[in-house]
Length: 252
Image (cartoon, rainbow, N blue to C red):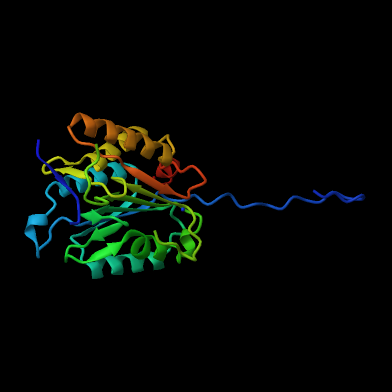
């Protein structure tokens, strides 16, 4: 099998009369999450860095999250300017009727959460993706789920702070700081493919945090069997469980 690595290189009562109960509106039925895919597959300035197999990851993500009734948009081969424009639009978008936001990033990466855009420029997961989303009041206290297939450095295995309210996010990284991620040139990446397989089985009934923990364990175990080691990582401020199945039925 041929593998490549993706290195860049949060009653009171009255004594005389009873008080009538006020009517309470039923809770709003929120729709399934909106999902945005930033698919960095082709690098015109350096074709040797093209990410063969990334289209298989996009296909798997579309299939899995489509079954969960998510609205999905893909941004193919975005430059740095396109990434920033996309995030700026998300920061202004109304999520009042949506349950969450999911962003899937597929690219080369480096330490300190740097991601490579298709024009060779770099952007930062926190500064350029996550922090601007904190400005969107309609996303307050709603999960902001970042799923990132990229290296976090060059090693093979044997952040900045914000004054904004960093609530209700989870970053799911395909590797650990300083280490590489691996991708099969025809089958896609072990992390995204495993994530989609586990989501297909459990997303309707299980909390996403427990799903991603299961995914990480499977990736580490399977990568060992494949002759290399990949250890995914999580950074999260989520305090409440989030199950995609709770909202999929609302889209019918």
